[in-house]
Amino acid sequence: MTQDRIDLRSDTVTVPDEEMRRAMAEAEVGDDCYGEDPTVRRLEEESAAAVGLEAAVFVPSGTMGNEIALHLHGSPGDEVICDALSHVFLSEMGAMAALSGLLPRTISSPGGLLDVVAVEAAVVDDGTYHSRTGVITVENTHNFGGGTVYDRQHLERLLAVAERHNLPIHCDGARIFNAAVALGTSPAVLAAGFSSLMFCLSKGLGAPVGSVLCGSRDFIREARRVRKMFGGGMRQAGVIAAAGLVALRKGPGRLADDHQKAARLGRALAEIPGIVIDPASVQTNIVVFRVEPELVGGTVPPEGTATAFLARLREAGVLGGQIDAARVRLVTHRDVSRERIDDAIERIRAVVGVAVN
Image 1: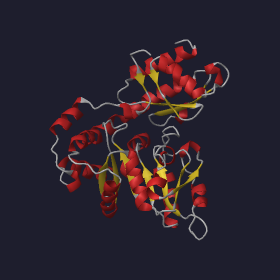
Image 2: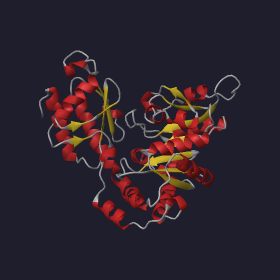
Image 3: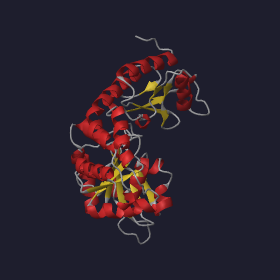
Image 4: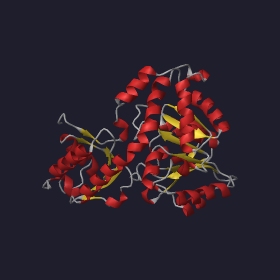
């Protein structure tokens, strides 16, 4: 593989910039398990304010943030209503069952956006013979749906379902700032009404590690207890929280550039025979497309068209991710410039034998 690689596997591959490294080196720290780290406390306060919720707790990962929320909202044997391609179902190692005794009730949703009628139909209020519903989850933006976004009107209808059935509703807002930028609104507008919300500092915002779980003061008090139980208690965590503060303060202002790069990539891919994508489906920084057999020799190989296509891209120095046997995901981020996106497009065209304009 060429050494000059363009890494579009995820926005998690970004490395801390000089401002973050300086902040980390100079961070004021204390023992966070005792609540004595001033940098962590500052990050938690600013994070809660950013999404309009009362309080927040710093956690090592988005998965931990989600799983703490589900643990607190549900009881063993309860069902968690979620999209069939949601992160909490597909990418958290069955943690809702292993850690909290919860069962996923999945709903197939166009673009990963839950249909309100389907959600209401899936709610089980009477648990006499069936597992009752414990919590509803919403993922905004939706990762495997292609970075799709819930607008406020859609959210209001889902929140109304939760209210009618007296259910908590959690937002996996790993990329909630991307959603806000795409809609021209604030994260607080999109978070309003949710029982809890988690967002990641280590994706498009660019921090090297960490996420934040937000909710009411009472909820976060309990979340700190469960964080410790799940192994997430940290000591002088201000060293990493300092990078998170830079990400929170500076990261949202540059997300629109990532979206523009993704839109450019989506339009270019749509012009390549054998790649199936609607450019209008690219709403944020995630580009998902289907690979037809003609791109990998005309027949479907045992490993699937996506795997075979990604192997060819890798040889050309472009790294991507896989959704399923036929679909590929490319994610734009701050460490790949617009010029490098154009370079990636040229390499993809060369791999499939399409002349470069």
